[in-house]
Image 1: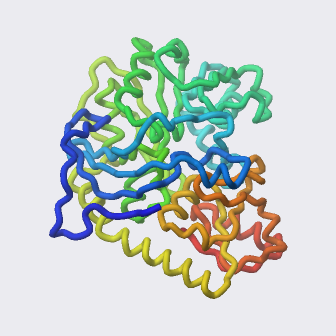
Image 2 (image 1 turned 90 degrees about the vertical axis):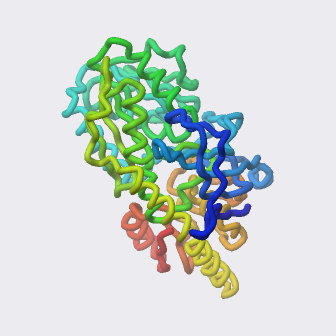
Length: 409
């Protein structure tokens, strides 16, 4: 794996990718600013053997910036690798921290939009945790559409009122609309973003009381915090408040609300279909294109220093014979290790999700261990992939009698 910058100094101007068309607004010509070569095309597909994990297909990440709408996309993305299936393991509901967030969010949406005895559709429902939660709390009926859905994975009293469709969302499911359409952490996996949101809008047709709710990672944070671990192959689309709101308006929606949550990591939008959307109704959270350009330039200028610092730390710990473990085996872990090209400097990866234990990480080849493993292993360094879980992880380590240095990526 190899990472590089395409605009490392202010005296160099990256070559405009004139043939690339922005999938968000249709503008031709994207500005490349960051690349990572030869990374796994999937981070959350669980492999049964180490060799299969090491032989996993790889692709490139080349981020291109649209100076017209602010959208960022991986211009090297190939959708032939979008093979989501039941062995795609991204369930987060084993974390008390995440569960509290999901519960609070569900309660808020139910109260705000009176989601009681209603029909709810979730596009990209994963294993169905959130959809079932909405149906439990509001006595609602639900339809979840996702190729990685697993009927019965999540136990719920609402299970009889929820139907799962193991497939990708498309025009053929346009009749599944209901009173509320939810789509969480799916849009960033789709490159033809305007086409996708337009399908959702066409499915609603003249049912203007239907509310749409989308949740995705916030790219402003990625740029400002130099969060390279949040840049990986599956995420071909990167949104900021401005580019997300502009997309929804252009596809026939009015933005009801736009906000950040979960430690400012997630970007959430609530919208409703309208007959004549207005470009004049700008939400206060939307950044200007000038401000976003500054954030892109900041990332380009400073990311190499952060990458080098982490490489030096890992190399030093390796020379000293320290035991180094990564906590969290998902996409952030894969991006962290492959971008730095330091897989051999990490001995183990642990995760609280029991469905990951004993499986191997694509491209990395490390076996995923349960947290209890650390009681015997007693690591010197534990690198946490997401800072929001630090308190939760620290408490678990204390309860297991593990004394270590806890670091945040």
